[in-house]
Length: 434
Ligand code: AMP
Ligand code: GLY
Image: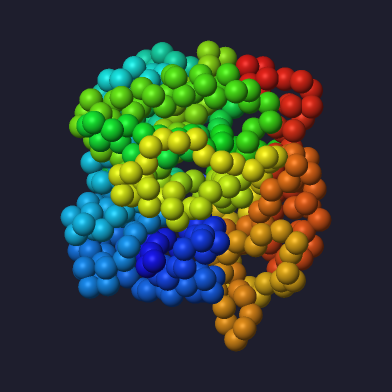
């Protein structure tokens, strides 16, 4: 079975590891891939955001399945172009990818389908936005979001009027090009953030889906959630104090209305939807949609998933998914990111990594190999991941494995899952203040 996997990060490496563990012999091609992925398959340098280029390769090489890791190729229409060749694709078409590609589109979708979310207004005009800030009715911070993809930097929580005005003016002046010329203003939501992934195979007369375990990312660079936001410094799942009725509530209030909304709007979906959820005092509210797997959430989910990943993704890609519930391992999985010096402002590259085989799963994210040695080559360099009987045991296994990896300037958060563990041990539920 020939599989083309688009992407190059820790998410794709974790997927490649799990695909290789499948019962079907696999010929894996990763594009653009990485030196890490080159140990699991063939890497191919290709502009993966160009539908013509990707479809051209697929027409010539006829892969049995194409898996799209990141959002940018989906928003650009890569899945549409490959699907038009009759090749199964795990990944949404461009119309559905607008749920991540345009925050204004996503908010309009949520409002049209009565999905609980932050009150918002979409603005494209300078005077209108300035007036809105001056008469802001929802309290601070004011959440300002660039409409389009902005490499994770397009959301600002402005603490006062001056910061809101400065951010808004910079956005409209093109800080993120066209992506920030439309701005979504949102009410600030307070609560506990979680990541809910849903496999979806939806079109006008078929709506099959399956929930993956809810997990939690840690976005700030420093322990105790201090410092700037990153792509994610570590994650765990399932969340120990989240009860089955809490998951049911998210299914009823967020997931099912989303699927009905897709059908009503004539949007097909064939891949994963990752709902960013804020569990507030008033219950779960939808922060955002992502149209791809989270990174590092995937590293957690694939530790937990007790399924043949290749067969599962093929079922969705071939439009044959029946929404069966997915087998998961008992216990809890965790992943901890090892990041480069200077991340997230920059990333010190080319630093040699001291690496002894750790007793947990090692995931390459931003590494390069030179003369048999691994070097840092990105912000998030490596992940350690494992599954254990519970969150405390999973944390302990990572702590025991950490001395196996080191380089000067390496950054790691040793508190992944710690706050949730304390919350659970205190007997609190998701409704208690976080
Ligand atoms: P997004 O790119 O939409 O995921 O936003 C990035 C981060 O900003 C989210 O993960 C949240 O932590 C935060 N955020 C987004 N929207 C809101 C909101 N309405 N209230 C509070 N925090 C938010
Ligand atoms: N870890 C958050 C994301 O992938 O968007």
